[in-house]
Image 1: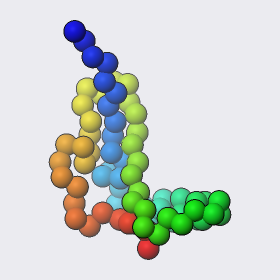
Image 2: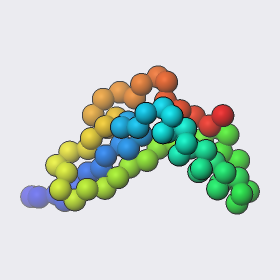
Image 3: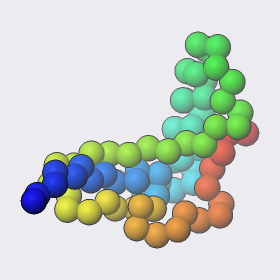
Image 4: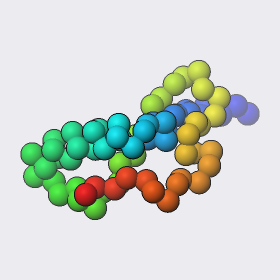
Length: 71
């Protein structure tokens, strides 16, 4: 029996801290503009690739303790 499984890159695991902060700031502004309070939210991003055979990034290892959360 074959099972079609989608695999993803955990994008945040490939970004430098300053890149992650820039992206988070953009998302935070957009969410707050729509009336959502995301101060306690955690940013998680994934990128689908139909040719991946396994997940890449934090999917394969424990997340570091210093991941970015909203300010």
